[in-house]
Image (cartoon, rainbow, N blue to C red; front, side, top):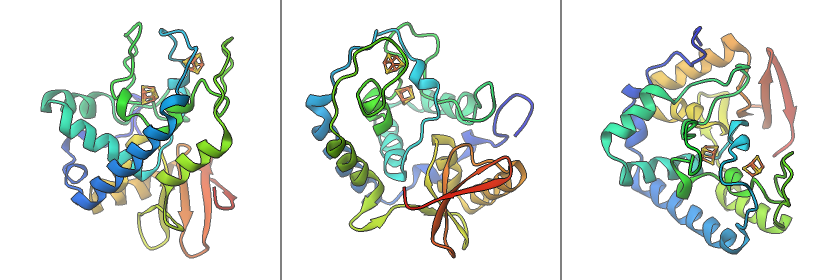
Length: 231
Ligand code: SF4
Ligand code: SF4
């Protein structure tokens, strides 16, 4: 990472993230459309339209959600806007450098501040509900745990198997902010960069990693590995 609070990688030059197999794109489409249908009548928010505080948290997503966002942008955005996001926003860190800033947050907008609202990940859909209550004085809408975990499993699992992307023979990425998925997905070069970044910084920027030989999940914080059982 460099002084301007950004992961020092040329995200704008990435090619591999645009060239996923169509089977993978279709899987992400199918799963995310099911999640949208499941939550459709439950997405009732009482948030002020100008509020975007929860967008400043660490926005973690599965590989399925990352893929869906990419598909959606490739289908609906023009190339200039897409390039601009990767040049200017992907990889920016929040002020405390402990988390990545969501690249799709339009900080200047007084409302409609999400650039990918219809493709936003699950966590953003449940902000403002009982599944992810915030500190603002709102009445969170009710979201039953069962529905939330059903949606989660649709995105993080394929059958009985959780979805993770191998970085090398030892580590896989299970859940991460958008920029880390770009690095994990683009090329062997970007994956090698991500592994070096994890080693040097000793911080997985809240991304959840999978230790393949030891069959366990962990995050890296200040050089320490914090493990936990299957999320
Ligand atoms: S994807 Fe949209 S809703 Fe989610 S954090 Fe980013 S700007 Fe906010
Ligand atoms: S969930 Fe809370 S922080 Fe997020 S937009 Fe609603 S009121 Fe604001």
